[in-house]
Every structure is written in C-alpha cells, then in structure tokens.
Image (tube, rainbow, N blue to C red; front, side, top):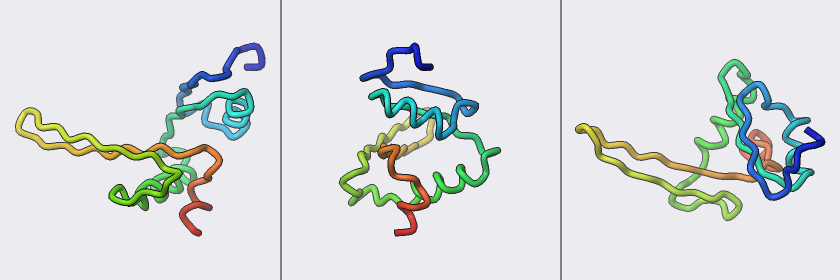
Length: 97
C-alpha cells in the first residue's frame, strides 16, 4: 500500500484486511477506514459489540458521532442506530473506563 495515495480518502477493506498494521498505515497516511469485521475474530468482535452496545444514543459521548433512521416497509418497522468513533479509541479500553 505504500504507493497508493490515501490522504483525505476513505479506505474500505473486507475482514481479511482488518489488521492493526494496515489500520495504522491508513491513519498515518491521513485517511480514514471502514473495516468489515466477522465473528471468527471472536475477541475483537466481542470488544466491538460491547463498545457499541454501551453507547447512549440519547446522550452520546462528544467524541462519538451518532444518528438513527426509522423505516416502515412491508408491514415492518425498523430503527437503525449508527455510531462513528475514532480509530484511536480501542473498544475494550474505552468501555472499561
């Protein structure tokens, strides 16, 4: 990845690329990233779930950007809560404070 111009971009990578080395490279190059996370990375998956389940969407931490959507379609109601956090805040450490 050293030859790719990343500054100001958003990099999306599937679960295979979900590694600290890759994330650090992207952030050091001035970009943001979206990684896909699968449950076969059990420890990390559990940490991320714990972190995001602990977000109070009515009164979020100022460092966490939140939003929600509500849809009614085909007789179903669905609310989705969205949260964006900085990569520097490792989920377990932030959740245990």
